[in-house]
Image 1 (cartoon, helix red, strand yellow):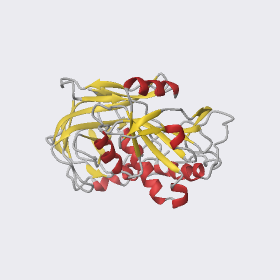
Image 2: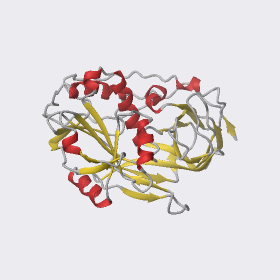
Image 3: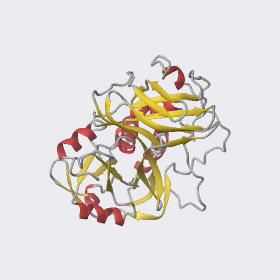
Image 4: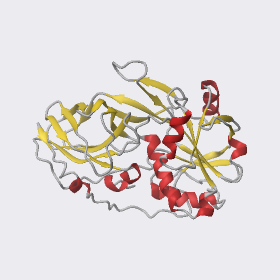
Length: 357
């Protein structure tokens, strides 16, 4: 077994982040442009205080950030919530007051009002949580032209253990009541920090005259190598989970030898572990489980927010930022590696991973 000391992990966080690229057009918004714009939907769901919440009426005069997710989500949902919350805290009061983050649960069976309120409150006490019947939820999702949320049951588990596949973008309805931008998984805090103040001031994203360049998140591999025959674990971080029900680990693996395959993940401090992938299907982002991850000869495979991560479930403890958490990776050729990912806040994943565009 190859071992990576927890003391080595912080040293591997220093990644080069320079790449020659054309300068951004600062007149453009950082979100993905929506054309034609989407009119604010007219629906009334129940908020986490048990009161009816009319989305259209309650958000008049505000920028409404509408997101469909669930509190047991280990990746997409807490990342969006943490990034928006972090940016709002830095904004002037008069601008912040014009922005409302609204979270509609796609898992009302487990997302009780109490859980919704506590989970969202951990990010920002002004965030609002809503729930609706399956039929009403599906109707609004269809109206917004996004994938209808659905359960994905974990292999070998009972019916109470499941993930929920759901759309991964946040809709930004401006002061005029139309969404001209949406923010998919992978949007960073710096992007929110550019767009939210402009939306709060009533600026409207211009209609794009041509297709905007695609966005990606890449890493430049670290020069630090871990002793081993072929596989190098170059980065390993865990997002500090809001609860013990699930957590996400992000990795960068480089294969210096012959073609190999990641065939298993586990942790002595978690009841379950699997690789979770966000893929495009029918123009939407959906989440899938994968039991094998090929790593070609000389290839670098990155487990990044919004793309792929190791999902841990039923943790024996809630690790805090600054701690480490044990994880084992099993490769078909290289064997087993025991590593200790550093635990970092969701809002700081970008800086620790060295994400860049």
